Image 1 (cartoon, rainbow, N blue to C red):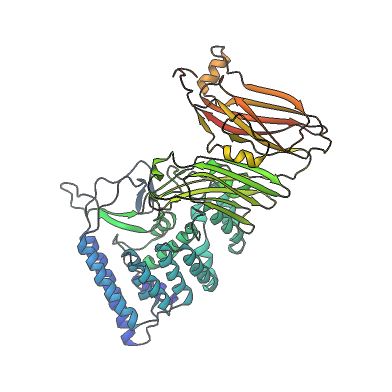
Image 2 (image 1 turned 90 degrees about the vertical axis):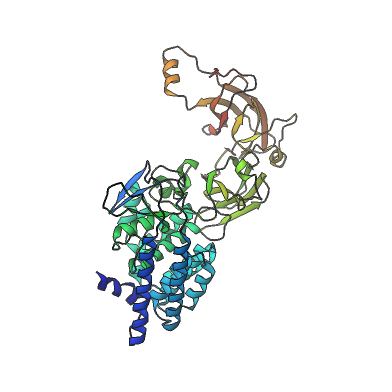
Length: 562
């Protein structure tokens, strides 16, 4: 095993035992690395009870998710001092044998662990081993330091020059995938996966506000760490195995170590616990969204899934939450205008420090992307994108509060044939409702959760009407959705009567593009409803658009009302 390990990465990345001196330097570096890991294991802090509700067995390991509720104990100062001593030894070895990829790699690894990412970048740039390996080390160092755009550039260059078989392994995302999409992915030859890889990382990007796709660079950084750990001693004190590689690819590398308390009377060694950074989030959407991105809905991105297939814990944020908002789309010739309103002032987590907000419209990894930005805790953003279906992302980020909020959903765009309707735009009630979109924007609600409101303005546009002003039939209704099982059973038995939906019907010959009305929802109790707008024009089937809303308890309403 040791011989195979010695000939593994060292041979691939350019170590040449050309002289007795270089071989001796290499052996001393390996010995120093092994000594440090033994010293670390001998001085591990003791953690509290381990385990969680969502445990998984991966090879020799018991893995569990604690969502950051049980942070690991702090590393002992003496261990940090020992790592500093190891770094000095590795630095000396790297200067003596500049082409030794193993020494350069371990130096970068422990510099990253020591929070010295700037120096790690310098070491990687001075590396003279195999070009792909030195570039991968630079990508790892830049990613760990938060330079995601720089990391992407370094990793892309590494992938271009690394051997094809290794490039295929590094870009393989199958361990992160689930369901039918995973089977479809694994059946493809490596060369045919490129388009799917682009789609996966496009859909998994955590924040459009940041330069670079840090979920993709995290994956490539993990692959780099797999190589570094494969050919060196580790904190568990056991041989490297495929189970360790799987855990690292799916959940990241260990950032802290501890040991379980010894059981009274037990002669067994205390179990060693490796802690990944937490809390972690699953940024990859559901298999359905990966297969059909432009049919995706917000629920396809559940960042806090139970027992997720993979997680990523960004170093820049401690929380990712759903962003309350309202998004609506309107036709502008062959293009689409998208409006997004938001209000972060009601979220106490964003109260500290400034906030950045971005609306991103993307037609896919190979198509147009448009981003609009704003730096206020509440407001509206708008952006226009060319023809075709669009993925709409709305992101908010407070660097000071280390808090992010976001939403993702698809905006399918059909061919403008005949009469069509825009999305419904919910507005604050006003004495004079708008007929132009520019007049509607200042009244735009920042949420579809209406709370105690029972009056709401609704704005829409109708397209494709003849210049002569043809007569159309219009109906607006509010219907309850998501009725519970018990309530449906009570309705069936006649023990409860369903709420009468709000419904308005009329005929008109619209003379303007925009139209609005004021809806009185006071007859409706708390619950979830759908506001539907149906337009019936001559010589085509009626068309319907809708907006889902939620009503809370109205002012003065009894708590027992349903």
